[in-house]
Structures are given as C-alpha cells and as structure tokens.
Image 1 (cartoon, rainbow, N blue to C red):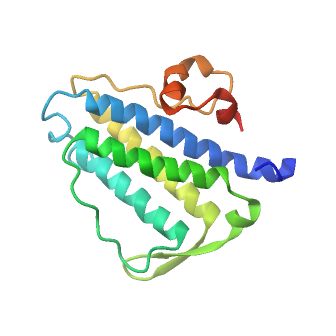
Image 2 (cartoon, rainbow, N blue to C red; image 1 turned 90 degrees about the vertical axis):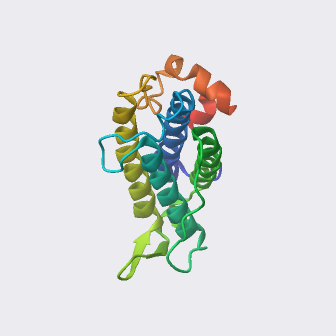
Length: 190
C-alpha cells in the first residue's frame, strides 16, 4: 500500500473500506446471535433462507467460494463445509474468513484489481475481474446482512447498527468494535 500513487490508492481504498465494513458488521451480527436465547438462531423465520442460521451459513459459504476463486484454489463446484452447530462456532469461522478478505483487500493493487479470474458456475465458467468479483462479494454480503438484521427484529436481541463503519468522522460509534478487533481509527482510515 505504501508504494501506491495517490490515484492508485483512491482506486483501491473502496475495496479496503468495504472489506473492513463487512468484518465489523459481521462481528456485530455474530455478537447479537451469540446472545440469542437457545433455539432462536435456528428458529424458522420469514426470509429467503428460513432461519438466521441458514442465512448466515449461506453468506459464509458464498464468501468462502469467492475467496477460493480469488486465490485460484477452486477447481470445480465447492462442497459445503460442515454444519455450524452454534452461533459461537459459526462466529469463529466467520471471523477467519473476514480477516482473510480484509488482509487481501489491504494488499490490493490496481493491477490486481484488473486481473481476470475464473468462477465455476453451474452451467459454465464465468470470467470476471477481481474488481467486479469483490464488488459482487460485498454487495451480496450487504444484501444478506440486511436480511439477518431484519430477522433479528423478531428475537430477544435487538438488531445492531451495521451501516456506519466507513464514515471517517463517526469514530465514536465504533470504539468498542475496533478495540475488540485490535484495530485503530488510523487503520480504518487507510
């Protein structure tokens, strides 16, 4: 990141911010789900996926799939990871995936963003740029985090605020979140 010109940094910065936003928002949702009463995480809800658990597992599986394509590890259709029995077990895996994505985006270059990758799809293989793939990953995540947020409204735990992390002048809203991750405002502003 240090060797980038200011214009290169402006091109790569949104991806870093989106990855950090996803990490922070997912951490808040995971904390909320770990605080649910027994059975609430798995309980039937109204949404595209029929529970908090199934929605969150879908999002995690999708993120793992795209990360594999970004790394070049995916050679065919993925096999889903094992079941995540509790919200706490899920949160541990979610954090590992999010941390990888943050690290990846913090080392992006303009050249890396324009690289083409192959994404195995049911009927064919897609060819996309890293930039477009990352945008898809972040938009897909936002879509499902919104569903999770809405489903939490019908539980014993109020849904947390999940949409202010990229505003530079709103640091008071994320003090505890950054402390929990060992991050600083300076890192978030890069």
